[in-house]
Length: 164
Ligand SMILES: [Mg+2]
Image (cartoon, rainbow, N blue to C red; front, side):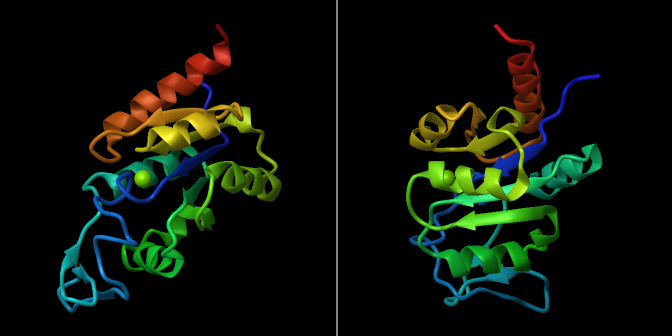
């Protein structure tokens, strides 16, 4: 039985959805009668297509999920998680600017999970470098979060537990 992380942490912009919530779209957001999520200008906003399945799979595996985003648009990001019906998956959300070392220290305080038992998915190298120094298994996401990236990440985590 492969060892699973005790917490999976996701970046938001360009990891769960293909835009910067503080730059490319215009909050507040709303959901139309057709179920589509739109911004203030009526522009439709979407998740990367496999994101709901990724979160569903982690839930099925019993791995809790958290968010760590350094966007300054905290309200818009939380609103999107609600409108996309993803809030139920997240045990914690750390959404504010600054180095993600702060986000992870708070996540550790809140959950009691050791950094070595966490996995983190993010599209930005600077966050991978910062958080990697804490001992978290960091996965560099390219072209958005997918089931394939999740599987690869969990394999990387298992190998990291086995040691060098
Ligand atoms: Mg990002």
